[in-house]
Image (cartoon, rainbow, N blue to C red):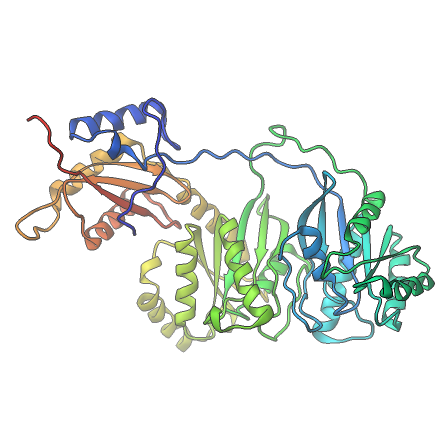
Length: 496
């Protein structure tokens, strides 16, 4: 916890953040009684955010065989490095959706893994994901390496696209200059119409390609606010070490194979968003890349995948942390939980592969939980098996409990009554002949709950942890971290 208060400042007559006008008036009265002035009120302002619900957008799938530059093209269209790119085939494995905008028109852009024919294992799963993306799309961009020309695999993709019956725009990629346009012209032979010469690496020709894409994409509905309600599906990030079963869990709750699952660790590289109905509600589940031990020592795709996992966590509301119970709880597991807590997300801990446990391992696991996860005893726990579906029905109640704690607000009057009783029964230890006293406090915001305590002196970290424990006992806050900052009253020249 930080001793720094937030930096926002509320206007004198306006209730900050999520505080009501009456609560803010009560807070200002308490501050005045204790000798605080306007400078001491800085940092109490929270944030009120309102988001509109957007109508469904048209979907464009980017397909092709491995290593033709699909993800590079996706990044070029997005105008930022979003999809994982590396100079080797097979980096993208799942179908990953982004929102793009060109000439004022918005659409969904789906990056896919390289499609290959007559493949087995992981490559077959990747190809299946690409085929699913084609079926779900309104239009398709077929990317071909113009330097190599049309291969047998490209011809097989053409047959696949014709069967799907979707509008297709042919992208002749890796045309870096005028000399390469002759190679692009050879792709007329594919029978898909005009090949658009593009260098997705340098951006050459991408504007003309996007214009052609807009010609075949249906118009996006107008964005609407209010009618569909505020917000949208709650965003749940599945995080954990590589190979703990995140993708398997996503497929199980979706009741279909939405993402690639393989025994090879690190199969997922891009965060994958999936809208799933579970427990009578719609949720946006985000499958993420496994977070390895030392991000700064990773190379290429794994390094960027870890960064994207951290970004996905920042966008989520709840983190479901998967722990493989067949292995001992590691430092990496505790670091991942701390990552979610530091991001201010509510947390559910899912102990996966529970069906593999015997009595001896179960005994040692409980001891490991008591020893290594004592700092997150407040997080709801579910014992599940993503492979068999065991106890998956308990996941939604645990998530709902955590989200409720994350959004809990304690009225200012009730909080100060609690603090007064707490300080009277358990005063702060005397240090250096002085005993700092908590004068009053307020909840500055939620998601996660943030408290500011005003005190006559420095409050030690141990005493703040004690206050946090008692706050949980009194008001719940199950499943959410609590942030407590302390503002010490400065001594100013005042008339007695």
